[in-house]
Length: 224
Ligand SMILES: C[S@@+](CC[C@H](N)C(=O)[O-])C[C@H]1O[C@@H](n2cnc3c(N)ncnc32)[C@H](O)[C@@H]1O
Image (cartoon, rainbow, N blue to C red; front, side, top):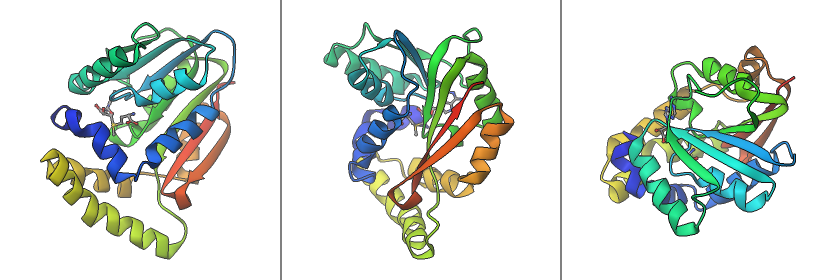
């Protein structure tokens, strides 16, 4: 599905979030565990925007690797890295977040933005993040969530169910892909329930930062 929308993915991200996706990635990058000579991994990296934000804002990153299952998304990402002159710092490679092919204690930070609700076993992915992080490293998840306020929640669900699929269809030609978005968002655990999943996977000092009335949330956990 992501291969079929890869060429319009970045444009639709900007449109559907009214440009807020940029601010959200900046906030995610503020929550990296700050170290010298940092190695970071981004799961479900898509077209690489999370890593581009990280390396622009943190000069101490020496290696940044993005993994994704959709080659079409990686191809768009690699073209973008070449245009920005970042191909030496950021490497995008085909890979499954369920089985990260790196050794234990490899990365200072591992992120996953708008990806975990697409996997069948989120705890398995969180465990893999925990395994491959160094001690004290941060696991960071940015994901859609549901606002607590009933009125805002009503408008959020209305936007997801009825506006997003139409805008997605107009700009990408793929109605199903953007209908799928609202189904996965409404069904996915958020808030304290998601923090519990992070705890189950072995993370400690778990914090959550709601964004835009709780329509999205950053979850941060530390490896002991
Ligand atoms: C909504 S996009 C998010 C892309 C990017 N992280 C962002 O914030 O724009 C979700 C991505 O997750 C990828 N994905 C889904 N399941 C995956 C898995 N098991 N392992 C790696 N990537 C996966 C898809 O191919 C897609 O590129």
